[in-house]
Image 1 (tube, rainbow, N blue to C red):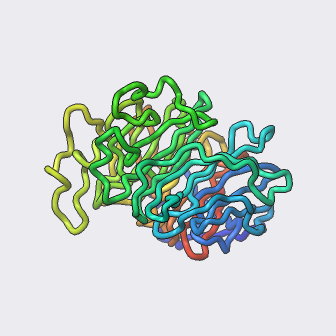
Image 2 (image 1 turned 90 degrees about the horizontal axis):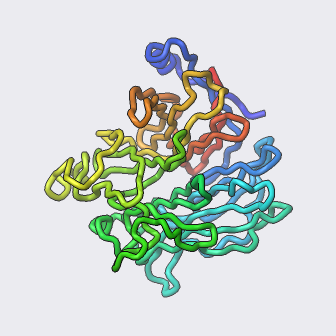
Amino acid sequence: MGKQLRWPAWPLLLLALASPAQAAPRVEVVASGLEHPWAVAFIDGGRMLVTERAGRLRLVSANGQLGKPLAGLPRIDAGGQGGLLDLVTDRDFARNRTLYFCYAEPAASGYGNSTALARARLADDASRLEQVKVLFSQQPKFSSRAHFGCRIVEAADGTLFLTLGDRFQRMADAQTLDNHHGKVVRVRKDGGIPPDNPFVGRAGARPEIWSLGHRNVQGAALGPDGRLWTHEHGPQGGDELNRPEAGRNYGWPVITYGENYGGGPVGAGLTRKAGMEQPLWQWTPSIAPSGMAFVRGTRYGKAWQGSLLLGSLKFRHLLRLELDGTRVVREEKLLTGLGQRVRDVREGPDGFIYLLTDEDDGQLLRLLPG
């Protein structure tokens, strides 16, 4: 059994004052010794797969034991914010053992990289990946160590959403359709283009694009409404919660509630412009959000059902958002004494919430009801 951590009395007191009917959650350490873990996915028998940004995929047993890195991964350009990043299992994994992962793909020329999405089969003995196929590569490739995006969501219709960062230096690209920088894209599981993508057939537009005007989307999940929800990093302030819709423009870098690093407006300093979407919620100052999951089960009581959970890299805690439809009505800070960067947040098949901490000695945590 993993060990349980309890936080100092003062965060618990603050939490009790904020939510007197809900006891403070506890965390159990499932596994440790992970090097900057990025994503966790659930397979079978209580086992999990965890990606490490350095380019390793690790099996975690039901009792928290770390296995050796799996074989069969493609070449990965690990450095800065790039490496092996998100991972999800196919909804029919129990039958087909298929999973999807995204990573920083090096250019064949040796110059530049971009976010790629791949499909693979997990070997029967879970020691390696088989039948690896790259489904999508972000274009153009660019020499950057930042803003890869790289969250994957399987939609209700079986297509795959992939979030793509603006690569930091190429932020203006987020407003043009001839590239994949600062976009959410949608592809089929064979890498084909869904014919109902919003820019299919438009001259000069990449047909994979679903939405544009994003900066660096680090959280994505299907909501209770069956729609895609995302959050993204602003610059200095202006982190956003969005629900990307087909063909819509989410404004970056023309509109933002943030400012340039060191101060000063981004562009003309606009927060609104006709034809560009407003966020459902924004954080100024930035919290540096990462990972996202809706609470669907009953483990944490009725008050938590339908809540949106996300991690804060900057402030090293977990946030719970209460929603009324698409409107955020309350924000609650949890695990304020954690002291670790929360990179991923997932609800497991057992109904518990799992977290990954992005540290040299990162941990896989299970959130327990108070």
